[in-house]
Amino acid sequence: QVQLLESGGGLVQAGGSLRLSCAASGSIFIMYVMGWYRQAPGKQRELVAAISNSGNTNYADSVKGRFTISRDNARNTLYLQMNSLKPEDTAVYYCNTDVISVPGARRLNYWGQGTQVTVSS
Image: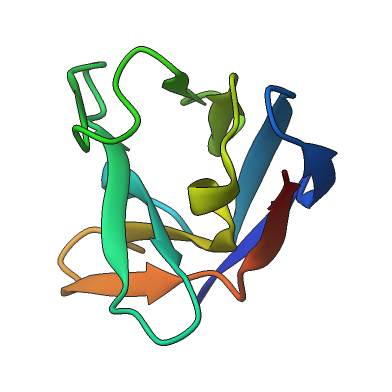
């Protein structure tokens, strides 16, 4: 089993910054693409940013130039640096990844429990 634990959310004024972290623990043999998703009240969960285990990234158009995703493979940790935050960035942010726990095991998808980000105007 793998656990994903997000941290770093909070309340910030528009224009401010936050840095989210997602620490993966448990049995991890291979961890594939890691991503940050968010879900605002009444809206569908959407992809914010993703990063492959070789460092290739992609971003939602709404966050390009403001957010930066990174990962530390040695520590199995994912980060999201969020700058120039806007009220429309308010949401619960979730970490997601696919993991093979041991050689020969199936590739399974995992979600964290989420961390709230609230941006006031």
